[in-house]
Image 1 (cartoon, rainbow, N blue to C red):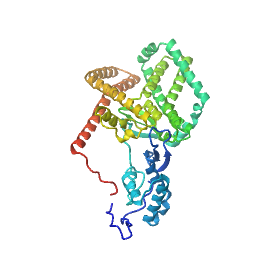
Image 2: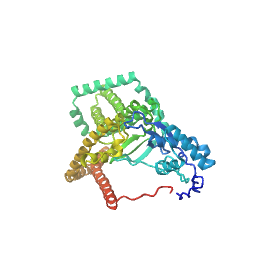
Image 3: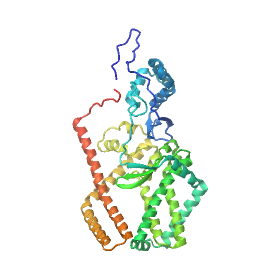
Length: 449
């Protein structure tokens, strides 16, 4: 940015030659208040052009909204336009704001977040979040139009009567399978038959896809548009995903419905499998039921970014729990004063997040330590199993046996690759932290300056 000129005789500060009226980033949308949040001061939401949501304090949201409302003044005198924006914000915020302060908030707050352009006309940067333990290498397979259509096909399943029938059928079916059928016997039969293994894996993949349809359907039932549906890599395992960012427009109840929509559709899938077993008596279907049950349990775990994590997050109204790990550990272990991110939370969400962090961090550390300690034996066992599978497949095995053996080898190799990626990521973060600690604080150049 240019250096401000010396004050004129009448006390006014003429604008730098490059000063323009900042504008809302093209394609951005002012959503409004984040409902039922766990913050002391309810944040306001802005949807960026790439679909990402940004939380703003009320004052910054008022500035962004005033700039958007006064965008017609862009071709007029910039100083007067900024004065009008400042007056509008001052009236709504109940505090006096000057044009220079508007420029400062734009260049130091809104611009770097990608919400508005800078005061010198520099376009808003493309801001992409990089949350901890998030899905990577995402590839969109189905567009928003498809998820909207599919959500409409199944939206009737969220009507209260339909939900009551499905939940009761699921509970009755689970009780019947656990008390009258032998899952162990069905599992032993399926393992010995390559066709059964492929069928169970196929049904498992179909269940995962139907899980994502549940999220999309819950969004449409709540009145918001689900995003694209695709696949990616979570830590190391392939995973489906549905973009339900728009669910943050809903109240707490609507967001929880979107979170639980996936496991609810898993339960429906189990009901269908149980009915199919009653009609056919085909044992591998029981193994598929067991697989989908394990999927539900996994999704409800709160330690990683599964559905259980988002359920907890929406219950307390805090979108990203992982970012509070550092502040909470510094306050708890190092006895430092609470930092601003913690002070911004209401009392009970702050207590909840603290308990979550103090529980999850040891669990994750224990799990990682256990995995790392077992790596040598795991490598030996996996190599031996791979050798046996490869040997069996090479001695006149049929096409199905070859496909089954290849899938088993692939699944055995995934945990090892996962451990390697986790250790690499942690090491990379530690190196970055050490470099910043040694170099000390540095001043970052402001974009557009």
